[in-house]
Structure formats: C-alpha cells, structure tokens
Image (tube, rainbow, N blue to C red; front, top):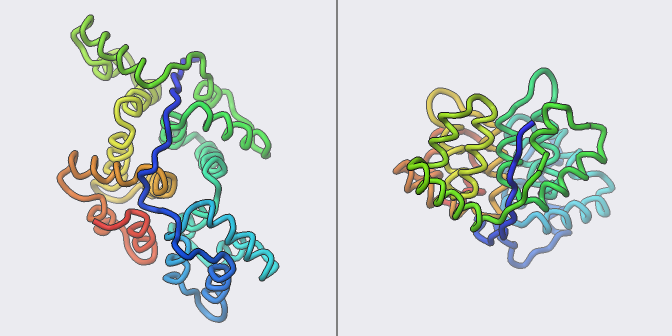
Length: 276
C-alpha cells in the first residue's frame, strides 16, 4: 500500500460556464420537454439550455421538470439520447461529487480497472472533496475493492505551498527534480499516481491540459477522459486549462476538440470549452 498526499486548495472561479442571466428554471424545463417531444430530438435546444448554466441552476431545472412534467429529466434524456453526447449531458446534470463517484464506479466496473479515471479524479481533488465522494460512493451499491483502497488512503495531509517548498528543497539536495526521481524509482500505476499528484500540486490546469492533449492526439480519441475533464472542470478552471493548453502545445483546446470530434458531441464540448 502506498501513500497519497492530498492537499487542500481553493476552488477557483475560472470556469467557462457561469450563471445564466435571466435564469428561469420552469422555462428551461419546458424547453427541454419540447426538445424531446414528437419524432426526433432537438439536441441543439438541449445544448443551449444545459451548457449555458451552472450545476446549481441545472438542479433547479431538474426540480422544475419533475414538478411540471412528472418525470425524471435524466431518465427522459437518457431514453432520447445516445453515445458520447448523452454521456456529456447526463454528466452535466449531476452534482460534482455525484459525478466523481459515478466516474469512479465506471472506472472500476467489469474486468480490470481504468487507472486513468481513478488517477484523474483522486489526484486532483481536495481532501474535503474526496471525503464527500467517498461517502456518496459508500452509500451506493458499489464498494471499494482492495486495489482501490490504496488510492483513498490519505496518511499525510500537507498544504500546496508546503509541498512546493519540499519539492524545491528536494531538488537542491538531490540535484534532480522530484518528477525525474519518480520516473527513475517507480514504474507502472505507482509511477502514474505519484506523477499525477506532483503535477497537480505544481500546476493543476497544466495537468488537465496534458490529459486533454493525450486524450486527443494520434489516432482515435479517449472519449472517457475528454468528457470527464470537460464536464468536471467547465465551471472551475477551464479558462486556465485553455491558457496552459495553448502555451504547452501551440494550438487552442477549441481547435483540438473541433478537429477530433463531430456532430452534437462536438457542439456541446465546444460550448463547454467557451470558444477560442
């Protein structure tokens, strides 16, 4: 079993998704109902509503939909939509800790474990956030397996500034960056976990920029990673992630998403990205 250092930082207000002006939950609920009426579904109308309001506002839309239509909004959308677009829409309807718990459960479902999903979430969340996710997770049917327990074992809590100073002193003493030492001394999942933690401590937006880049470069797209980050960070620090992406790769995140996705899936991701 190994140790994960989880630091507590302030969740910023650097999201591309902000509160919708002139918000009317009942009107939005009606718009979503109309988008699903009759033959076919108006995905553009769904994107227009859900990609332009906050998580808190979406909860009010869900309540208004239940009261006016008498059905669960997520259930209705799930029956009307499919594929990656559906995954994004359903993710947007969840509270942040619920979405994290949902993604963790998916990462551990079936044969094997998607370590990337566990690392993305657990290495980048604060101690308080992980505690809430754990309680929601434990309230469900799923239970942590022995392989996952090590990811949740928080044996030492240090704040970000302290750890940055530790890394600086380590480099002075050893003459080697902490990331280089991890790569030399560790391998496999253990290496991935510790590198993710260090990268998040040094520069969290840069960590997510790298994950987004790797999810889209080359042949094919790792949609699970792309969706998870775009949904989870849209309201937190997507503006900073976009800046880091451009600095690191010389191209905009918007252009990468536009060139690597298609259809309604591309449209809603670009809305969450917030333009060039």
